[in-house]
Image (cartoon, rainbow, N blue to C red; front, side):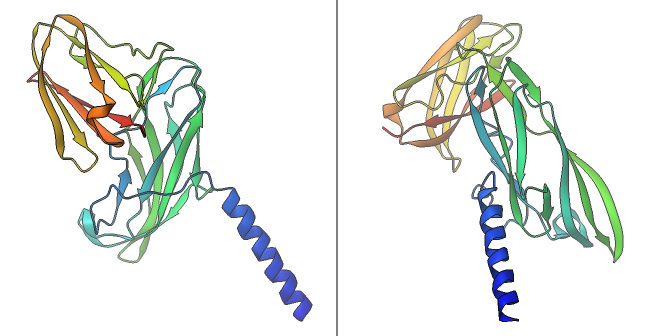
Length: 253
């Protein structure tokens, strides 16, 4: 009997070590408001990191799954689990894996999706994450399909230049990113005029603001790392009619 228990204990220990080492990412939902029962980090405004053709890529999406439907107006609904069934329109060369590895997130828990690989082409497409929600409504089992298409998979060329459309107001990802010295942000303008350029820290506090005089066509903004502490920032450019935001990272100096 004792031998059997010791054998079982050893088996469980080995399984736990193997399962832990197999984890592809660690959930980080620190971007969610305190007390929030559900959400995704980073948020859709921050988005996923931009990749570059031929360069190894790695980024995570972390999720917190609610245990019931109270925040959605259905207090009688219980969420047992959410299963990711597909992630469509990732840039060629990228794949995804989940923690838990089964891609089944239990209600009231956190998990993450790890996106990695080496992009092979310039890419700028919205990702469609397909899921199935399993739960109960007033005690009756329910299965509900659900999709999320709030995120984009963006890959630049080896020069770091996206395919910005000069026929409309458009903004490229800053290059390089992350940066420890300086970086450049290219944007296109249909007409000459002033562009509002703002930078926010990860808490949403405005840390820099300036009006940029844009010319028709492609323009460049240079940002010096020594003006900011290390960390993640959100920059936005607005022409008065449209505002475009992207994420940049100031590396340790």
